[in-house]
Length: 631
Image (cartoon, rainbow, N blue to C red; front, side, top):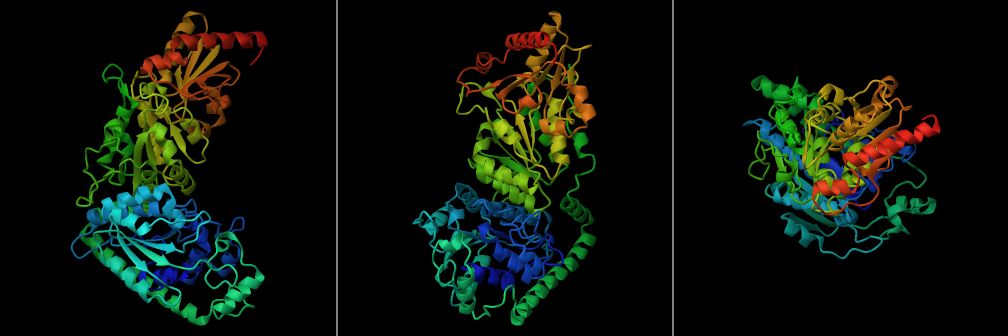
């Protein structure tokens, strides 16, 4: 209730939107970052004619409803991003603002501004306490995102208390900071502040608005009890009386309110019609640009784009680290895929993600497609979610795999929201060596694999890296994590992109195998060497490369059994956590503790990732099942 004046001003006077076409590409974007207040957003969508009826409102927080307990972009029309985990929404909004600025620079022509929308955010103290919002807000100031406007609900209520001067912090970030002392008696001052914010094009704006939480409630106003507790029948009746409403009526919208919002809705549709007329002229004058725009917002990939991914030729191409192959993949498609935009968290020379076809996105070069995120892994990932949510983009971002831990909150929302963000994570194992266990990922891969709707790739060579990118690009509603090695890996003679797109395939086969070895990434090479020694010792061995467990499990049962029959002793080898491998193997060579500092090869050897150890473990496994009599 304390935020209601903000929502009323935005939806009734300020924002441009189309209830008849909720995906209109030049609509103003609205993000309710404090998603626990979603009843307010659902109310505004209902009042402005979106496909949200009174009956939908009555199903609030009920199973299967269009009004879930926090905003979900894939459930409710008019909701841009999933919010609820505090700080994510305002951080997504930075990505939305980057998207507008880039598209305006790329597609607008004199007299025809296809893209000129604002991004509006309502947030509370909790959002601004979360570190992710600090990261994203800092970058927003650096990038001069003048069309980003945040309305900060300064109700001075948090359970633990909050005494920080937020305004000074945002001044330091490079934002315009405005203050509105009261909205309970009217919205004149708020209207003036929003107009001032819209006029400032050189800085994003945060408006610090003093409010009373639960305003109008006889017993819960100005109390943290209004945050999560229901008002109760008596308090609800008293609140309605405070606002001059009939306390006996529920879900009642007075005629004058309906009329006011009908006018706002009609004004939004008129703006949409004006834009449609302009776009028709634009399309006639710029047919190629218009076709590109329509393709991008439809989610369709450019024709033949995955055919451009590199194919490794044994004896011709040199062995390299998979992070180097990743760089080749990015640059193979980027020139013909303008929606591919992204960058690294201050690790471009290590992640190898620079785009040769484009310069940086900066305040003076918004047409650039490479983002310098700085050391902001969490903010980077949340911003990429915002880029995807805007439409017309396939964002990617990169850091060391171990630092996924900083970004997991936003990555989880990529998966939940069905945003096909591509995460390039290099230095993918203890093999990175001297930096030691603080930098060596052990549990990170399994942490990611345990998440629904995300594909985790650990390619072993060039063809597998290309396959990882192919699947990542084709699966637009599933985020992908491509884990790449720091050091060189040998090519697999039998690998092809087609085979690797199945998630796992037979890299080395044997007639009537007595053992199966499964490897990922750099450990596949170890498995292949071990298989040769085992064959020489009379143990016919099949080697399976499994770049992606998730994709393999999508294949038919027939294919899965043709690769991993299940009735042959099977040993998996991966320099990461052991958990999860029991689904595929009878025994594992894996990590059960943190790593150690030392030369990469020495660390591998110390933890058992050597040909000798794999051979010994394999022999012991085969012997165990011989004595057992069956697998």
